[in-house]
Amino acid sequence: MADPERLLPFLTKECQGRGVQIFERELGALAELFAEYDVVVNCSGLGAQALVPDEAVAPARGVTVRMAAPWIKHFVVASGMEAEDPQHFAHVLPRVDVAVVGGCKEAGNLTPEASPEEVERYGAGALMSS
Ligand SMILES: Cc1cc2nc3c(=O)[nH]c(=O)nc-3n(C[C@H](O)[C@H](O)[C@H](O)COP(=O)(O)OP(=O)(O)OC[C@H]3O[C@@H](n4cnc5c(N)ncnc54)[C@H](O)[C@@H]3O)c2cc1C
Image (cartoon, rainbow, N blue to C red; front, side, top):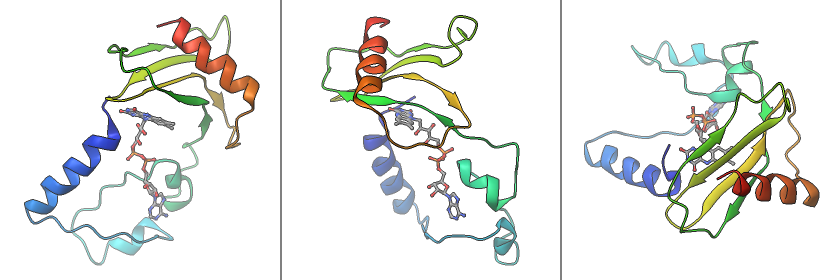
């Protein structure tokens, strides 16, 4: 776990400084790269569903809140409580300036919106468990 907003620009700069070239383009299939490259590493996340295609890849919806809580220094992930609450997935991920807190994991749900009730429940709930 890391502070991606700081780590990723740093790593990008480091790689480019060592001659790595970065291209961005949308692929219809992974096989489009096979003629151009000897090695293809697939890190397409949920996109692998269509790209590979890999039907075993499935979404899980979470609700996360960024809180200005720089005093939080410890990562907390409270999973494995499915018997009590199938959606329970309380987590507190400290970054440098904020903490990313949340608390659900809904298999198969692609809904991007979160209701004010969910933000209150999962944001406060995760902080209580930290
Ligand atoms: C709200 C939230 C907060 C998080 N906070 C933290 C945190 O503070 N610290 C931490 O360590 N982790 C955090 N995570 C987890 C972290 O974001 C993931 O673990 C990480 O992004 C996984 O990286 P990945 O490269 O495997 O997949 P992804 O980040 O999902 O990247 C997949 C990439 O593949 C690309 N792609 C897919 N299909 C195609 C296609 N057909 N053609 C071209 N490109 C394609 C996508 O555009 C995407 O760029 C957080 C996650 C969420 C959702």
